[in-house]
Image (cartoon, rainbow, N blue to C red; front, side, top):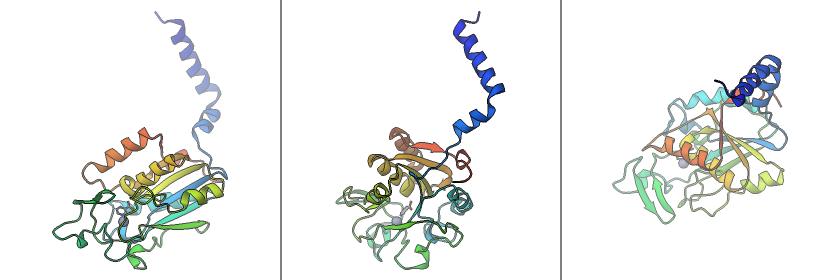
Length: 240
Ligand code: VGL
Ligand code: ZN
């Protein structure tokens, strides 16, 4: 026998589905407002096909991001921007290979192939990005002895890039994060954005991951725990 609660629940579903499909759709579609910013993380040649640290399917994020960016009044882009001989490069650690780790004063550091060296073509933003209204490009990882996956805070956990101050100054409350790579710069940016008090969405189909040693699953778990919302680009209303 159906209990009263179940009958009410069934009626509720039917009534909503038949009477208010438009309202239901509107409730799940997110409309970026003036207090929202899209953060486009590290869509640079080094992370794209042919690059020194190419992310699998990395090029597929570009059209998704270009389309999504049209819905945002505020877009900030980042560039990984390392010195030659940067501490995150395996090439400067004798006997070490890319994707191995090393202990540095600020903690464990994954070692990478040389990538995104300041002023090189590999460090340039993809020429296929089409976001003329992007208002700020923030560079990170430019201190030789400290990495910075996050667009907010370097890997020492204390040196600020200034991004939180910029966003607060622009009265931004919500950030939507997209780009490369999901499990490093996107995730660390999203986690630090939460710590800085922003509402945070990561747009899954506008990101791709590196996925080394379980890093992708761990990143999504850490982000969920921190209250980062995982959405798809189709969840965002089409224009500003
Ligand atoms: C990144 C590894 C090293 C990233 C940057 O953009 O996710 N990953 N440097
Ligand atoms: Zn880097």
